[in-house]
Length: 198
Image (tube, rainbow, N blue to C red):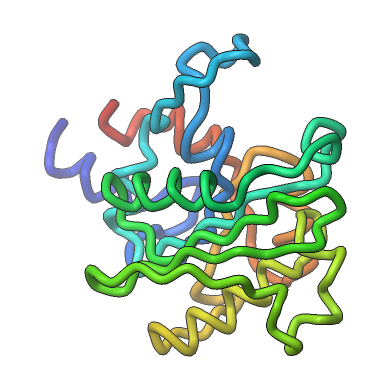
């Protein structure tokens, strides 16, 4: 890869990646099964291009959980999900990971990494977010509001349409980003970009 290509690699689909605040979906965007056709695999890989784009971003935040038939059949253990995000934060420069592991999107948990300190927050217990109970899972925007507030409080950054972008792989991600008023980029453009090292 030439130096010229590395400069071009910062621009994906006409969007400059360097210095952006990026909100990522997790499953299917950051991580997924090595074989995308194997829906039963528990072994996850970090998809191509993700790390390179994350390293160019100003901040990387993750919002995980959407209203699908599969996710609405069971509650997931928030401690186990949080531990997966803590491990992912060791590999990737992620500052905030928000997730809604409960049926109906009634709970929102946050893992925050600020320098080397990691915090775990139950945002749904904060009266400030009572209007979002049942609206934490995408395509609703409850988790986006929580992440926006934490980004400002913890890192001094304000999320807006000019400095922030969402990268995801489903219509839930796209609709949530649009509803929150930020641009959306399809994850496959990152995974398959010839400008990024594989």
